[in-house]
Length: 437
Ligand SMILES: [Zn+2]
Image (cartoon, rainbow, N blue to C red; front, side, top):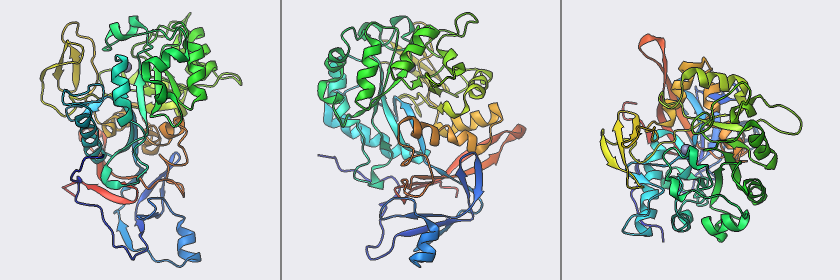
């Protein structure tokens, strides 16, 4: 049973006896690496992007609604592949009240998150005991099947970051719950639950350390089941990382963080970005552009090495949007929040982020000199392709889901740029409009 709720921005409704065709005009569409002055046609009935030429000239259908965007940018909705929680809710914690409270918490995140421009995402679990996965995963699987805009942001499936990680690179993960998948698939099944590894799995992405015993056959077993694998929280040498890619891993989790740094005689995981050959492909890689986890120049180097692989992620956790202070964390330790900076009280280690994805795009724009469409690609087209959803999400192509963000490109003090989310559309329905509009 889904609990009832109040939609964020009124109830998205439409009259029943109408075409449901909407034309966006006077806008700049994000298409590849370009901004193109073109109209976009969508259907509020199918929730998909339409072929405007066909609608107009073959079916002679006039739009039911024309939305004049006044020259603003119209982008595919943003996709965050690493979000641990927000608005006081943590995907890794089953509340004392039980799983009903958990499912309500997930819905609350979805309805609030969509207003930030993130129209789909991977709810992310940090390393946990098996019981947590086996309770939580049933609520974190793909949630868009009803194609109901009132549900808010859509889960594309869970991201399990752990627990098959290297204890020496645990970061904020509780080292006592980390495991090695020594026996491969049976160990994965014992941890996540065997039904959760069967098609259709609620899990979309698993981060693991390829150097751990049994990791390579585990990667093969997961990718055979359509679950994507990302390398992270790892001591892997360049050779070990390359073996992970050959086994089927296709991504690196938060590049540079929780892994060995580049060494000129052993380039480590970062070295994969310099690998181009017919037998091992360059992986996608997550980047936390929050001004705390990484130096802007490191981001620029990674982007230059593999521009089509860069995926901006927030890695945000439940304290996002909460006041500064010291908060209890899941493992009995505590986290200090000072502005955007979150650290573990006991050792000062970086403990996650509280940034919004659109602000990561703004940082990326200002730090790298990327164009607006190049920066937006890192939160739309590239993550969609990584997840094998390139025809459905992260694109304005005909037939894709009409998940859209209207962005205002502002100039701020010092000549920097800033992207502001003005409107959000989900499945062809407007679900958010900024108050100052
Ligand atoms: Zn991590």
